[in-house]
Image 1 (cartoon, one colour):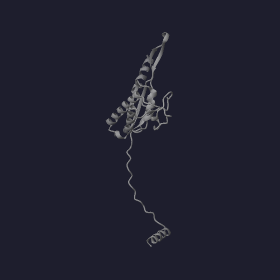
Image 2 (cartoon, rainbow, N blue to C red):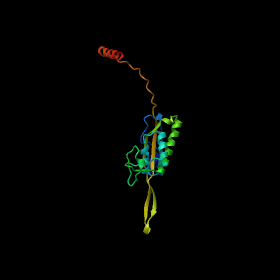
Image 3 (cartoon, rainbow, N blue to C red):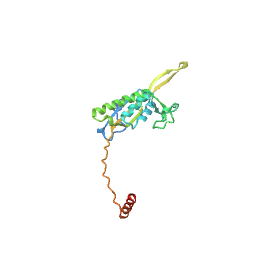
Image 4 (cartoon, rainbow, N blue to C red):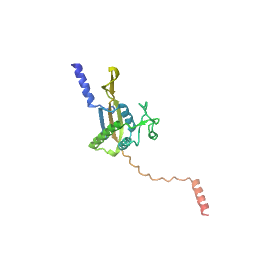
Length: 204
C-alpha cells in the first residue's frame, strides 16, 4: 500500500511540472511546457538549440522559414547519418554543413511559443521585447510497440517522446543616453601661440 501511494504521489508531482530553472525576474517572465509529447527527442533537441537566446518574433519567423525549406536546423549533436546542405553555411551554430527540416518538431515548438506568448499577454508583458532565455528538451519515457519479423519473431518498436519547457523574458528597453556637452580643452600658452602663428601665415 505504501509503495503504491508513493508511486502515485511521485506521478502527481511529475504532472505538476517543475521547471529546471526559475526566471531571475518572475514579474517580467512567462513560462510554457509540454510533457510526454509524441515527437522525436533528438530532432526536437536540435531545433530547440537553434532558437535558444533568440527574440520571440525572430524565433517564430525562423521556424516558419524552416517549414518552408527557406532555412534549416543545424545538427551539431545526434548527427550520425545526417545529410549536408548549403543552407547550413550561414547558420550561427557550426554544424559542418549538416542540417535538416524536422517538420513535426517545428510544429510543436511553434505551438509552445504561441502558448508562452499568450501567457505573456495575460501578464501584460510587451510581446515585442520578449526573448527566449531558457529552453530545454528532455527525453521522456519510451513507449513500447511491437513489430513482426520473419519466422514468427517479434521485435520491440519503441518511440522516443520528450518533455519541452521554455521561459520568455521581457528584455529591458535601452534608453538613449543624452549627448554630453563637449568640453573645450584648454590649450597651453605655447600651443596657443603656435596656432596663432599658423593662422597668421594662412591669412598672409
